[in-house]
Image 1 (cartoon, helix red, strand yellow):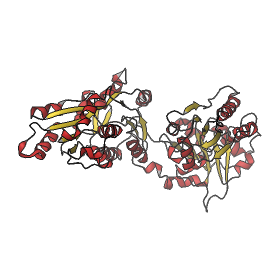
Image 2 (cartoon, helix red, strand yellow):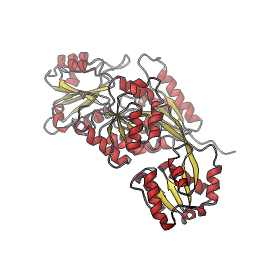
Image 3 (cartoon, helix red, strand yellow):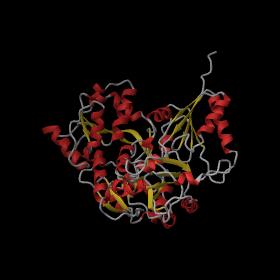
Image 4 (spheres, helix red, strand yellow):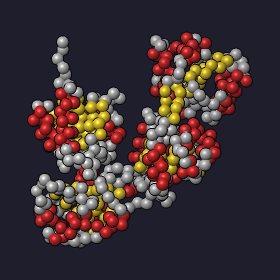
Length: 516
């Protein structure tokens, strides 16, 4: 009987909010974790890096929660590790800076459980960088003090005089006590005219910043309704923010955009919008499953050499058809006798990425454009008795197969995936709409529009909302459902859609006012 694998716990800093700020080490550990125990402020997208079968445990403490929560959490880490599991304890910011990582490490050491500490970008550094406030500067600040504005009953009292003497002071967890904190600092000798800023949701798309002086900031924050989580920065360096705030200069800063693409397809599109400064709400309208039966597709694969044309209508069709071909022991060379057509440049790129040559891409991404192209490629003999294979969704429009059969082609439609409605994201979208914080809802197909609308019981909520669509067919469907089409690119591709959104929103008024 083999020895049980030794378990281990990694205390990993998730960073200040932007998932891209996690360390490479932390990301790699998440990808091979058996268990992820995460805080409320750890980005969910990082938790989702763990393998599909990993256990995910929400350990986020809430105000007013039971006092014994930390002890139970320590025991949980110990018991999971003793089972021989790889446990990632994912903590917002840095695990050992106001994050109780030291206490958890002590509990693990006492229990004899091996552990490692993986540092993270702490909120002070994130808030400063994402607001253009350098914490040190040769002309303004050579000392930085990091402290908590919420010391708790078991800690030493705050030395306000020491804090007031710092060139730059960063206070964590002080939003609720901001008036009392500023009064204490001024009473301890800090100048009420010192520049000060309060940063809420630092490095996240929801980031909001208010700026004033130590004396005026509480009133400014109250009027702007800035609450936790927020970080206070005080010192002359705050005065540099007006010139150095690169985040506010991004073209989509302050915008909220809903992305309705399916999981696994939305990442690149969402990342581009976030890079431009947008807050992205992912609300996938559909999810993909295998077809109920592979019989029709497998029959087509057995006679793949008989087809003169294979027409791919989507990236999903490409990937799932070729995966099935290889899984059944086939070879890409089996397609050597067929001319491969792709509807749209993204579909063509997916074919080329698998090492295959695309014969042509129709200029018009409709059935009529595909048929004109095929007639031209077929030559004088036309399409009569020409065998055509179309790998696609199990349920899709029959316009292309019907039109090809009308010209005499022998068409086989091979279902390689099916779609189903996805429910996630509807609450977040509804809440943002009610707060008038949604600038655009994006759609990349007609089926996405229909499935997205189906998420909502009260569809009046969506009526008149601005939409960004990939092309005219999707636009027509969106208008039919009551959306106001505001953005449509000239080229019907995902990259072109992203560029069109940036152009449309760059200089127009935002539905989400910026706070500054």
